[in-house]
Image (tube, rainbow, N blue to C red; front, side):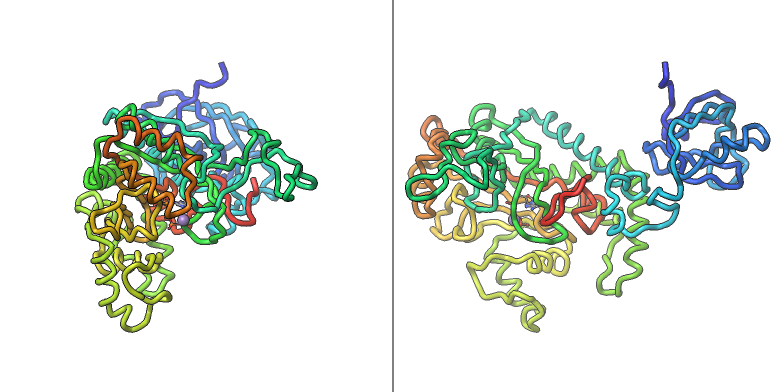
Length: 479
Ligand code: ATP
Ligand code: MN
């Protein structure tokens, strides 16, 4: 058997009692021809491997270069040195894979996040990305645990769809037609009947419509999968490929929906605080360092851990879109014309600068905005009695802006079809969706949480490209 190793995280939690163990990992540093800092990805804390002078060949020692992989067997003893309580006195060391230190792009020093994005294939081997991606994993696990505990069914909605759920027109087309000479109709338009699926298809922008089909049978479902948007927005919060969690609940109204979303977000944060303490402390430190370079008014008022603690122990602020517009209109920020997009009045779509003002300057906590004008929201949202607004809700988080978008759905068939006609959504194509309203329709609601934005919030990483392994953004799909 090759692998009877102990993970470094587990080893560091043991008492040093001269026990014999085997570890495997990658060299972070090797100093004084005596001390190897070995990391195996289970924690940012390296294991100090002590190489006794004269015990190993000079030629072997030369191969303990940065990022070489080693298999080390030895005895665990209390450490004399500072910085660690135990160390491994090596009895045998095997180099599993050499690493040319000259060519290895990551030096044992601080690299910028921008530089590391270009080395995304190796950046997991740094402390920052080690922490971020262990937390990302923990949050993904916690998502399934949360819904499983509540009796939700995990539903896999298709990645390739024929429907344009939002009517947003920002989709990636999926086709096998030759693009130099595609088959054409008589009017010269492309004949998608000849395409692979016999129709025009795209990558999904949301699993919601299919999710509603599940909810109206199982009661409660959730999806958790990749979504694709060809939006050409090069921001620190948008990816062309991102992961979304979309619960959909039958017998549920807007308030139930908000309650679930708030409980869900707090659960995820609490989970990370309990299970990823060490990594969060590391990232809190990192963020504090990074913010030292910023002018005072750009720094966060709270440290990362303080912020997370605050969000799990305080209720989110809930207000209507109409109230939000009033607050924004009356704000000094608006009166002094500091918004790039001025507050023109009721009916306008809120820009990210407005959302962030509400969250970061006015309320200083997460905010749930409800009852938006129907003109700026999707066709499936439930129409309120005022004839002007829909039962939508967006959750806005400090430092991020929109993190959740959701609504109570229009369950009344006549209202839904009328709204679809007004918005030029073809009812014939969505016949299967409309069937849920025809056969035992029920009040239902749901929301979408952007997974990467949630990971950003928990880790304090300011750019969304740093919380997904291999980011897909306009003009960039390396790796
Ligand atoms: P935004 O206004 O920020 O573009 P949206 O209104 O397009 O968001 P929804 O369609 O409601 O967002 O999607 C639900 C959630 O998915 C959002 O609240 C957000 O967390 C996430 N999300 C949306 N678009 C992206 C994207 N391009 N990259 C990463 N996450 C996204
Ligand atoms: Mn968007």
